[in-house]
Length: 244
Ligand code: PGA
Image: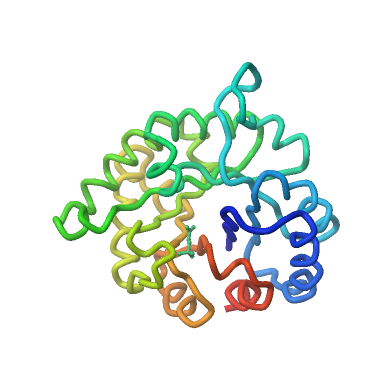
């Protein structure tokens, strides 16, 4: 269960979130819990989860280790401060910041080289779903960003299926729609990495996951977890998603 805070909270607000959140998930051993705050809050988050099983992730990363790239943060920098995960290719980054399949692939490789666990996001836009192109869009996103990985690299990533029309809109995909998209993604994985990899790979659903709809989504065997935006900002809300 991963929380994507997007551009919300200060370091002080991060610390106070964890003070409330830690006891609420102290016995949540059924899943891994990852919080992805903005870069400036990563040190406060890492400090707050010390000696707990909660992990911390970034929301983006650059693909080179260092250099003259004003404003960018590299994977070794994230690893050095105790960040264990990173979201790559979120639809907001694709939509507003020019993320492409090629940059998703390069960032994923860089993250893996630094020992970070990438959560690689894919998902169709509303007009693509309405045009019946969901499967083709997912296939193209996999083909460019994910399938070029080596098998041992692929084994270390988590995929997040996030239909763009469901993000921040309150419109969740039905559990059946999400499961169908996850099956489509597993077919892509199967075609490149084989049956065992397709079964073992973890696919999160993201897009308006809330305490009151998480159970239905998680009842689908195809859905291995959730990437949660808005509902991860508040400790009780995200804890009740973790403890669905
Ligand atoms: P949401 O965001 O839960 O607020 O829809 C999900 C995401 O963008 O990862």
